Image 1 (cartoon, rainbow, N blue to C red):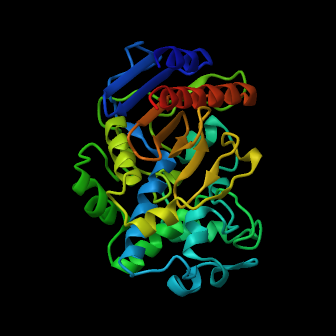
Image 2 (image 1 turned 45 degrees about the horizontal axis):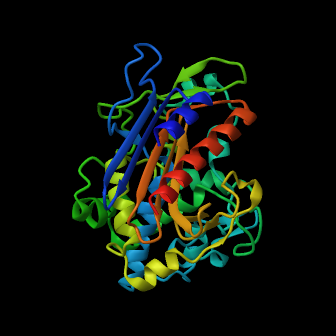
Length: 354
């Protein structure tokens, strides 16, 4: 695992951290530096931005509500949030809760509206701005849907902004409160939080660096970009230890009833150009990816300016890994090599312990 962590670093990642938990114990690896100024080591079990890994927590809450018969996966957004998804060909009456959780809604991704020009200038000019969920959905409604709901797959953060709104509508409490009460407290995930627009990561943490232009400088982006780092689609923070506990509990049936866990693990194909490893399929807030040694692993990833994180667990939840890479390149070829190295690290670690 250390060799694979070093291989990921050698693709140009400034800092790498890995934690693998198995029934036989824990293995960790670190490579690179904690920041480019002091060159301090990458901290052990440092705090991380979870990015879109937040979606798995939100989907778990939604499926718990399904198990309690307070909501159905076949209910439409139009029934639950009347009039919110409408205009320019968007029709919430045709989009189900399942479509939101599985990215088959066809809704435009609001991210392209809040960060239209990939540059350091845009990052610094807008990183403190925040939006209410309703505002983000309204931005997406300016665009026609990419396809009729349920007919194709395309990743859209707008889906989980709506999921967070539905949780609050059904329960009368925010998605953050529900995540704390239903997941974080029962599992004692004391280092995981839903900080909203709070910009600072607790110490210790590794600095994140984004290259906005090919051959350009690495920009310190440890402070998040609030327009897309503060909602139900990607705002949580935590540690690799807590993430591994969460995915282990999820896969082993501690958080969902059998019917809801089966629904979460019912998948659709993901297009080859999606950036996911070949053969990946998407469930409800949970991806399934083939292992080179046979079978598959379950998990989710997250990314933002300057970081990529991946959590993965074997289907029985007995072996779970979290990898964090703390810089991102603007060169597509380097990015592809980094993604391959990250996937290989996960694959090797889970296959070696199978």
